[in-house]
Image (cartoon, rainbow, N blue to C red; front, side, top):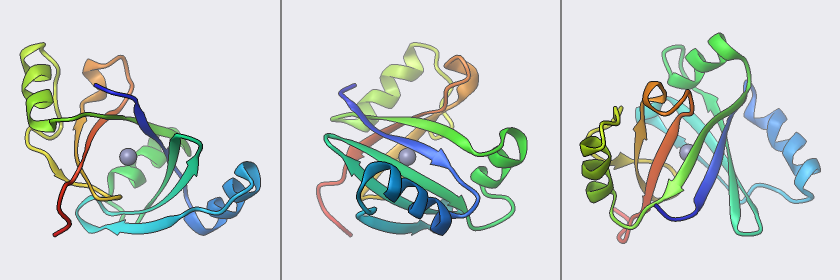
Length: 136
Ligand code: ZN
């Protein structure tokens, strides 16, 4: 695993939160994106070499809706950059980690992603992400 790619924050209203984080960081988000398969709307801020992702649920059964219902708004996941996500998934499975996605899927920000189950990582939801070489 390489650096932390971004930190994901679950929010109730992404438009309101975009304003809050704009004030906090002193700059606007650089993109918004909807990931239909995950039932989320996202926006990204760049702070130096790091990124912050805001996530709002677009449906009741979205993982973000469930998270906010259970825990309220706040830090939802930490994403780590990896060079080869398939290899990393296999390595982690061998190490005994429980993955939510056993195969990489398309995430926002032109990434391939996979989540680890927080039960096997001390309650921290971890996302692996790899840059997608070709946009399709
Ligand atoms: Zn993320």
